[in-house]
Every structure is written in C-alpha cells, then in structure tokens.
Image (cartoon, rainbow, N blue to C red; front, side, top):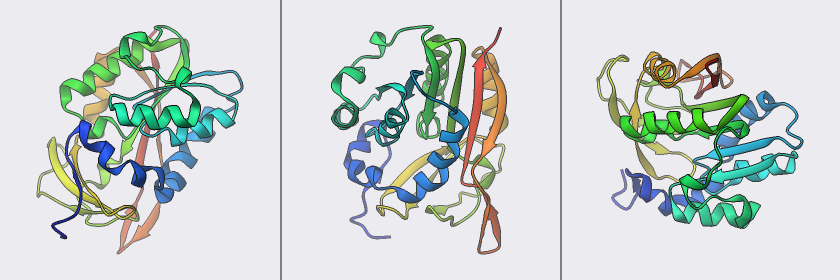
Length: 229
C-alpha cells in the first residue's frame, strides 16, 4: 500500500478526507438511495442528521422538504455542513439539541468508527432526542460481510477473527483511496445495546445485493428503531 495514503483512525481525523466524503457517489448510490425511500414524505418533518459529516445527505433531505438539522463532533464537518444547509441549521454543541423533538433521526456510518462507550452514548442521546412517535435509522457497513477482501466500495484486510468477536480492521476506500480503521461488532451485539438503551427494533434493512469475485454482498445495514413504549 502506498506509504502516502491518508489513514483515518480517530474521529478528529475525518476532516483530512472531507473532499473525498463529498464525492462518494458509490456510497450514495448504495446507502443513501436505500435510506431516503424509507423516510417517506419529509415535508415539514423535523429531521436530525447525527454525525452528519460534510452535510451531503442533509442537503438532499432539505431539498425534499425536511426541516433538517445537523450535528457532528468534528468542527470542520460542522463548517462544511453549515455551508450547505445554513449555520442556523447546524448545532455547535450537543447540549443545544432539543430533547423529545425529532420525527426522524438518522445516524449514518458512525457507530462502526467509535469506541463502545461512545456507541452507547450516541444511542442513548438518540433515544432522548426522538419525539414520542419518532423513528431513527442507524446504519453502517454490514457486519455480515466482515471477512470479505473486496467490495464495490473498498478493499479490506481480514484479521482472522470470528464474526462474534469485536475487533478492529483496516479498509481502503476505492473512492478517495484513503484508509480507515473500522470496528466490527456483530449485528446481534448492536441489537442488544439498542434494547438496553431503550430503543425498540422495528425493522432491519440491507442495501441491494450484488456479486463480486463469487461473493454475494450487501454493503450496509440500516436499523429502524423507535423509543420503547
């Protein structure tokens, strides 16, 4: 692998590849085109993109009529998102986000790049921010394909760990060519944490299946969740 390849291993490092994130057309065709139809009519719906990155999806949802707000822990990402949807729609502090408010909360490709304590904190926050009838869509790379070496989106470096083992592994994104360190956790682990945090699993969605090098692949999983009654 090229020694000059950018490596993203920590949350604060994602600003190094912000331009690449804004140009991920393959990811958009797979993930975003699966997620958006699940949301239905967004006219005047209060929507929060939690971990919005540079705001590409948020801008698309705004164009569909959503009253979109965004939050991201990375200041550079918040700045980029603000340029797309407005500073007034970008929360600068987590504490500023209203509780029991949002019809939809999306959290995309976040939980697989943060430690377990942060996973639990984010899920707990989402539960508090949803309104009584709200739905959250939380998605990331499909744990079921943890041991493949290549997908349409990236090259991977399997570790030899089993599916049930929580472990870190490296992948190289085909769009942008940068490397990331991602954490594999089984789907069942996430389902358990959702339940412990007070979220009820409504449905589990996968992006469309395709075949590459003899492997059947669905790149992403998206969990549809609501607050427990």
